[in-house]
Image (cartoon, rainbow, N blue to C red; front, side, top):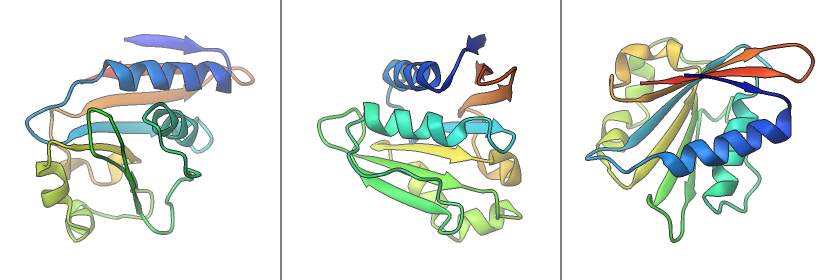
Length: 144
């Protein structure tokens, strides 16, 4: 599915609607978030976190790789935000406890740069690819 998004505010609305449309699963709910640098991956994640009631500042965890946010009164109990940009293989992701994280059905995972660790991510993960358009415009591709 392809959705044009006019600007950052529209991206925030799209992200909030997308997250609210997801259902819990028998394991962690995973969202692969791809796109060039500056495409809007962090904007998407910030909006998703806000829609889930996260009050903390949400930044891309480029250097710490992973941030975990506790959720209250939501479908999930925690949001795990991973930036795999600096990872070179799925083995590095597994060293962070990936197998335990994805086994937990009370967890929503949003992973930026999933192509760096692709073999670790189950086929059941939701995929969002953000393409840069003219000016602030973006094209969001969603699929499984």
